[in-house]
Each structure stands twice: as structure tokens, then as C-alpha cells.
Image (cartoon, rainbow, N blue to C red; front, side, top):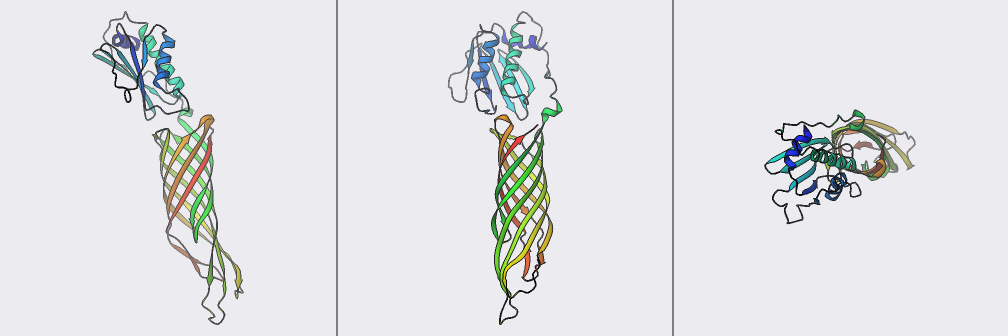
Length: 312
């Protein structure tokens, strides 16, 4: 029935103009209009096919020509055939990759050409694409990252390990990051005749869970998440004079964050990602014996770059 419907569109078929829109750049020519035109001609060598780029070419298809357009819209591919007074739309999954999707589109068009003698009225046709297995809808990966974060006494280097799980455009991440120690000098006011002095150091460790949205944007994916976690701050006194009692202290605080990033898929399952977190933490003060009270900041900024691998 689908072939019969396409056949009504194609008719005598003087020539076919093929175009693609919105398909990702996978590092080659598999997603181009030329690839679609070549696949059509490979299926039917006698077919007159032209690769068309309407956004850059002023020439338009002649009257009676058939237009074949393959467009990516989110997680789906839409195959459109437009002829004289008729049009058919076929929806497919975009999970198989450009090369296979272009070949599938060419097979659909070729199948319609084999039924040119059928004259039944074109029916309403729903997508006949087989369901995509659940394992192909889920993407899972791990990544290692490095960057900088706002520590207690200034920006410091930080390192992160991330696990990510994505279903269509929904994404869930688990992170653990550690910020290196930042240091500041201090001087106590008592006793005034010989005030104790030294260095106060603090490092931070955080664990968080992020959930959000990761739609396709250009060649990669946008990442927008709400994040919740817990942070540990370790503070200690060193290089002191006049301080007879020294004892490190630890503070544990929950935090929330907004995360914005961009991930770019590479061949062989690898990917790169850049992201920025803005964290909000309840202000908390704790005493380090031998120094003044340490207060953790309410708002902090964290920036990371990642390299990772998708194992699903």
C-alpha cells in the first residue's frame, strides 16, 4: 500500500530532486543530499536524480519534477515526496545513523517505482518503521573531566568523574568532583601582644545527581540540568606560630545547582563535553581550632571540560 501511494506521486517521473535538511555532520558525506541522490541512483541506475541545495541554489525543480526530502526533526527522520498535486510523508527513527537511514529512504522510493501500474487512490499511511529496540534508545557513558571551581579562598583546579544515562532527550548524570586545596593567611587578635598567625587551608569534595534535557543542537547536544548533591569541606591549620592547639574540621552541606553544557559525539563512541555549574549552598560556618571561623560561600561557579566514551 505504501508503494502504491508513492507510485501515484511519482507518475512518469521525468526526474527526481533530492535534498536533506537538519541531518547531523558525522565526519563525512553520509548525511548529504549527494549521498541521498547516489543511493537513489544505485537502486535504480536509469533514474534521473539531482542533489539539490535550496538554501544555496537559486535554480528550482522544473514543472513535473518530483522532490524527495529527508529531514531530521529531533529523534525522528521525515521522508517527504512531493509530486504534481500529491504528497506523502513517511516517519522513521533517527537512531540507526545517516548511512543506514539514507539507504532505507532510497529503498522506499525504489519500491514505489516498481508499482507504477497501480492506480488505486493513495491511502493514509502511518509509519511502518519497525520499533527501535529499547537498548538502542538508551545511551550510557563515562567521562573524566578537569576544570576550575570557586574554592573557599579563590579559584582552584578541580577534577571530575561522571556517569551519564540518556533516554531520547532525557539525561541523568552521577558526578564526583574534588577541588584542590586553597589557602589563606590568618592572624588572631588574642593575645594582642603576640597574636597567633598561620595558614588556613581548605579543600572540597562533592557528589551530585543531575536530571534534565539533552536535545540535539547542531552537530551535538545541548545539556540543561537541575542538580542536587552534597559537598564536603575539609579545613586545617598549617605553618602556625603561637598556636598551641591545632585540629582540622569538616563541614557537610547539601547544595543545588543549575547546569548548562554542550556535548559533541565523536567516531567510535567517544565524545567531548564542556559545561558550567552554578551552585547554591546554605551558608555555614564552622570552627577550626587554632584559627578563625570558616564560612563557606552561598554561590559558587564550577567549569569543566570532559572526554568520555559511550559503552551503550
